[in-house]
Length: 615
Image 1: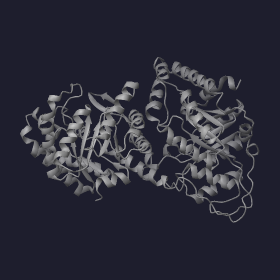
Image 2 (image 1 turned 120 degrees about the vertical axis):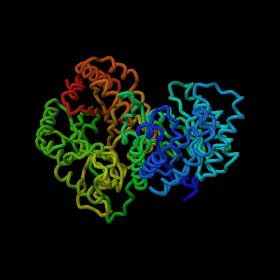
Image 3 (image 1 turned 30 degrees about the vertical axis):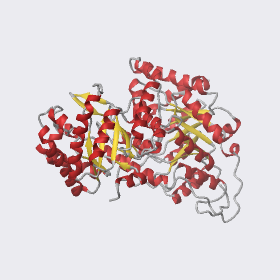
Image 4 (image 1 turned 180 degrees about the vertical axis):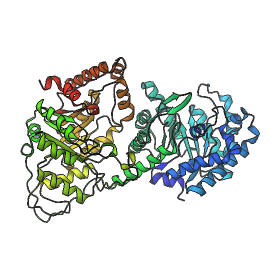
């Protein structure tokens, strides 16, 4: 195998997830010494390792988190320290041989409790305990060490010194991150992580445990500029819930995988899971990263050699009614309605007619959102425009078609009379209902926008001149509350350069975050019409889902508190509509228009949000 430190410099390395969570889930009581299970039930530990290896991780950690003499002593097992650690490595090796090759990391946890004060008198005993455990793990054949879940940075530094005094193997050192509630918390984390980064004994700097995927993302964004070494990020699965006396983590594999990709965009070199994470979640993370890597290699369509001179594209105002209103600076009103999971288009056409009668400009039609199988958004758009008499904005994703099919669809959509298209990359199939489906991703949203731009100039995807160009209004997405501000800004700039003519944002609940992004975007890339996404919340539960499960959506605590105070279904809906109207009033001076989502298909709620705009 490639040496670990060489591997982590070249590729994103995926560590495994929780061992303790899995042992607990398989019936072991919480007061059990989990390290001793290496002796009492080695097959159980091996089976868990094998699940993670089959999930595709690069590193599995030995079941030795608390297997030092001090912590084992609390169970009367101090004299079995060597046997427990040696057996743990043997189990891991067997699992790797059975299920596939990967690195084996010797896991070592803290001795001092989080609430216990650090005192210098601990130093000698810590060096002895950590050195003894590290010696056994090294002799037994681990590939690297992971010191994880430490609260006291001084203890972690002493542990690193102890490990390196007996071994030259790579060492990752990881602290529990603090939730960034104020400047003091941020300053404390920067101070701690800087000390780790400067320590000569530490090869990989990390954070793990303590908080869930969304919260740890803020910490990654804060700390990455202060870390010059490879950076390891291992969050908990999310916020635990008590169900029938057991601690359960309810976040889905898709949720976990989405955030793992964000950490990599922020500069993480290695990712994994801590409390509550499972092989299923790590499997989704591995798949998601593979798709992300494939996409990143083809993020834009290459410059084309044309067989003839490119034709002049139609002006924005001439392309569609929506294009004309955008060109004139008039406020756009649109409602997003998801195509149905059936062959019956009558209900969605009726909703579209209702929108036309109320004066809405366009219907936005998502294309297989969250990798779901629904009736064709292209066919739905054709029938809505034909039968309901209202323009559509066709969302078109790169997941399901190669560039040949994309060309056919775009020219066909133009020939049948569609004029407005939103270029999106699309969610990977592994995150949806058909995990065995194959994603294409010849290009992403940037490449698609550029391909449509080329067709508008009479050039096909092979570089051949067409006798007649298309005249599609090109829209792209924007996420002003993205986990990585810099990454999203750069990605938006790529879309602008590719030929975007208007933008639709993710749902916005924080006007200031939107203004900050727009200021930066306009300064760097000029001004495009921005249609702002607005989501009318219907309950506190709905707000919790949006806040915790939808990446890129940030709901201020004030709004969460307002929704929490509502009692009953109707009161929740009324407050959600009030908040959405307030959002429109707060941002209308910077918006070219608004796209309001119809929650759970309830178009009448979206219409109510527009209120005074339509009156």
